[in-house]
Structure formats: structure tokens, C-alpha cells
Length: 286
Image (cartoon, rainbow, N blue to C red; front, top):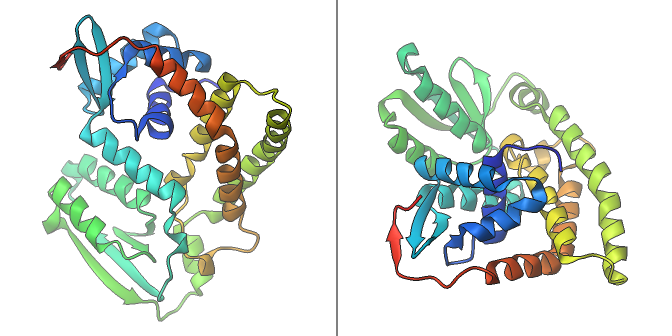
């Protein structure tokens, strides 16, 4: 697996393997799980400490041992990501009505403006320029949450409207989203992982795939695929260009992930079993 930022690896580990496990995870188990991904013990301890300081994780001291769990902020992020991966909004019916978001945030608050843009992109919005963003999805409740969390209710407005002219809808989509580039990413993903799926299917049938190899392969698969919710607006199918690769990539991801899941989970279960018994927790340990 190519070198990756330690924080991103930890997010993938918690998001795909630990999100629905209720107990906090011993630091030794996290070190062991990240070792096959070329992350050293020192790097793991450093990134866990930093992610705790930033509010993504919570740390507990139980006796002589440190344990980590997702903080509310980290859990919300990963649950939203899980929903976009497994239940993308492109499958929702579209009535032809667009949501328009317009904002005016002064230059001295440009960091706040940048945060808003990131949140809008995550929701699948595209920019028409001059502080106007659009999406075919009805995201009024999400925008209200963003407005409250960033304290910018007085700086933005939300509209629901139909497009009556003058550009063709396809041209409007091209202006707001670079679907050609996104489709190339999907094609590369398919070209890489389709042969791997066939190889691993054959290996598993012959009993030649270890739990650890399944874990590493599933990790790499998920780590790469989790980038798509960041760039794909998940437009309704009627707005997709011809020969769109998103559906094929999603089917490939689900099939390969399901194939690797039992063996990979066995590896994670075995690693977590080696954790020490948990004593009375003390919150805030590093």
C-alpha cells in the first residue's frame, strides 16, 4: 500500500472495522492492526494523541493501559461517510427541482467561507460562481444544520427552483461538476480492483488467502474507495453522462468488500482478543 497520511489510515481503520464495535480499543491492538500498513508504533501513538487533541478520538486510561474510542465528532464524520458509501443519494427519485444556496461572507471571515465551501462540496453541491451553489438534492435540513454550526444564518439564503433557461441541463452540469475527471477515477478503480477480485475469489476457494492478507486488501480497497464520496456529487442517474462508471465501481466495491469481509473480520477479532482486561476507566488519558 502506498504511503498515506497516518490520520487517514486511522480514519479508515475506525470507519470500516471498528465503527460498530461498542468497546474502546486498546492502543496495542491499534498498533498491531496498523503495522501491516507500514505504520510504526511511534507513528501510531503520535497520530492517536493528535487526533484526540483535535476532538476526533477520546482516550481512556484503564490501569496501565490506554484505550481509544471515537469522539462524537469523529463518529458523526464516519457515519456520514458510511451512509454516502453504502446508500448514495443518486438512487433517490428527482422531481427536477434544484436547491440553490447563495452566501455573502466578508473577506476577513474567509476561513469560515472556506469551511462552508467544503461542507457544500461534501453534500454534492456545485458552484455556479459568485457565491451561488446548486444541487438536485433537497438538502434544506443539512444546510440549516451547517448554518447553525458555523453561525452564518445571516450570511446565506436557500431556494428551491426549476431551471427554465437558457443552457441545456447537460451544460449546466458540466459547469458545476467535473464528471469527466471523476469518471476517469472510477475507470482506474475498476481496472485495478476487478483483477484483484477474481484473484482473491479463486484464492479463497482454494484456501490460499490468509486472514491478514484479506485484512490488508480490504483496507486498501476501502481506503481508496472512500475518496469517491468526497468528489462524486451523486447526481440523479438522469444527469449522468453516457458510460458512467460509478455504478460499476460501486458494484465492484461491494462484491470485493463482501468477499474479503469474513477473513478480514477474523483477523481483527483475533487482534482485539489479545487486548488486556479492561479495568475501571479514567477519562482523558493520552
